[in-house]
Length: 251
Image 1: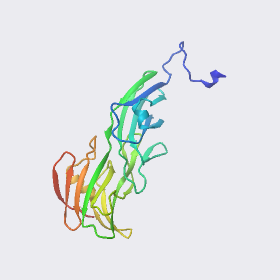
Image 2: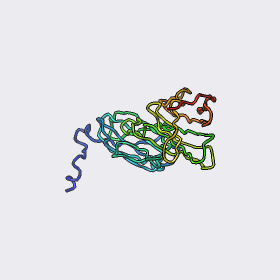
Image 3: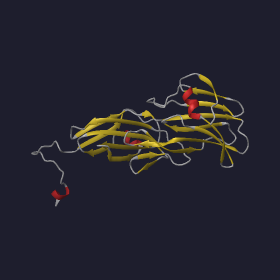
Image 4: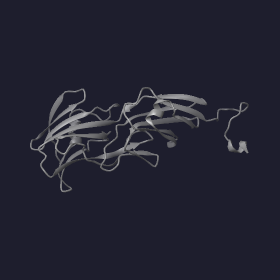
């Protein structure tokens, strides 16, 4: 009966090239954000194994996954607090929520041994938009909309979907913080909303792009922006860069 329970077990006498690999995956350094970790192993264009771990378990080297020995893509996302797994294939942003503080890695390797260790180097896959808005009148609220609603776990790339979030900020303050996912294009909007209807849309993505910012950078920089709704300019500061004043672009 025991033999029946272990049909794929390898013995010392047989050819062991078909035996699976016990793959230990660990980060190269301590994680920079809180939250859970999802590790996905992709073979032949499909997610074949997936583990959700705590930050502590992943840092401690407790991510051991047994998988077939063949070329494998290893995708890791850390910092998951409010986003959700969708059919084991995507990491999605919930409606009216922001992107989590994600760090990720997507690398390929050939699994050749029965036991291997692979260290992943994680990169910042979100951008904080620190937004100051002047002359927002009583009854007006702000919203951010775009076309990226999460990440594909096959290759860690952003995927298209409706993104609509409400900026975090004190109702008596002009300052807001929005965590943006990596973008595919310049189609981000800053919307002024009255009574549930959008009365004004500012081309936020085009403003960011005109400053020279790139969402293709390996590690995304944070952005500070000041918008005066009664004037025709926005002032942008990119993390590590100087400030630039840019004409407001509207739809």
